[in-house]
Image (cartoon, rainbow, N blue to C red; front, side, top):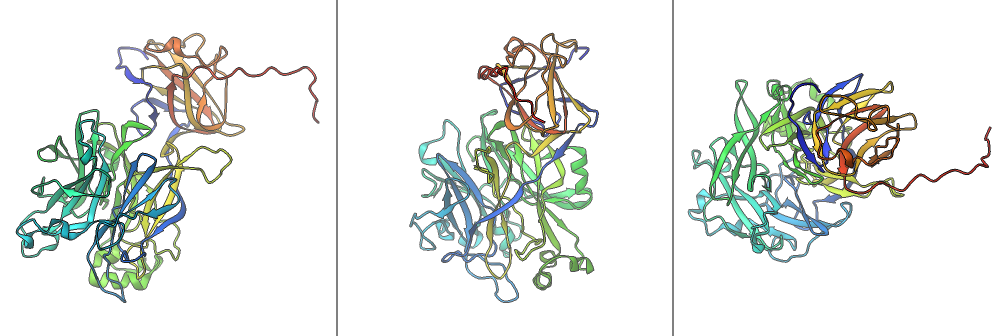
Length: 530
């Protein structure tokens, strides 16, 4: 750690290893790896009453006190070999308290369904009506955390006007968004007097994400962009900022690291974005875009994929409906504009089964995530559940399936069996104890050492003073010969060296809690086992 280097103030924040923000070097076989959620159960089927939808998508999950509200589109259908496109879309709401058991809310506001909260008629007063095509199919909801937000506007909904996508009489009239607000998440009213359209290259026929960013005191908005990348038109993501959803500024296309950006040259497109702060580390934004890939060719390779009859029918009325495939990827940012992307899919379409997978529109993540009890039981730590739509465009109805991953478990620093090494950049912290979200084994071990501003081991806190430890928990404590109290180093520029074997490190955090209980002493009358 020679020379003058910038010192990072991490204070008591949780730091994940999704990027190189804190990492100075990885050596001796240590490397960053992406992890993947595991498929779980189906939590909802969109087949009740008038829902009858085989193209449900753009699901919003909103944390509301001790429950989560789930908003989803219903009513509309994609044509199949038997039925054509029928009925209008409307927006419905359900709830869950544990992320596993879902029930439809009974709000009884609209005739479409007892749990409907938005329909086309809610903008009938916008003249001239032929130029307005409000689309409950393309609506996203979020809960406003702005401290200045009025109570009657705590829930906000972005609703699309898809006029230029659906109305051939007005091909040059660009579409846009309307803002709806609600005090309770059920009774929504339109606040926007006029729609806002930010850029002619922004397409509004997909999910639009917004949230209040406390670090800048403004709202961030993320939408789909459709413009030239590497000489071809590609779907991508654009962002802007606003204080009031009236005036917008700083509209820019997202910037990616070189390796991820080059995937656009090979045909990668990002259809949705699902970008929001990670609730366990709000300074880190996570995005789960639906990656869209279209071979644009109808050939024998599709014989390897399921539902050939349906795929053929789709390709006959729209080639891309038969040739395009979708999955979910992971992107992450610390400033809302510059993102690191993981090229490997975060969630692939999965095993080919009779669940109607591997289709265009499949595997779109719902926006939001829910901490859920581990299926292991017996006190195992909670995991993170995500939700995605499957069976898109089939003769029956779509389903919402849960998938789950370890808390903070998106990516890790993986240490090999022969001891790997990670060294951090200089930082200052607050707290008394260092905890690590780490998965080790019986043979696995980790130890932590601190270095001073000159890169020299700090006596009492060096690797030589560390006690090698193991375990598999969200908050393993690092120990040295003197114990685990690191408060003597708080507020001082230090760097950290972690050496470990056969384990995965997901995140770390300095906490204010005092040292845990002392280890009990053993008696003298031990039995010698064979």
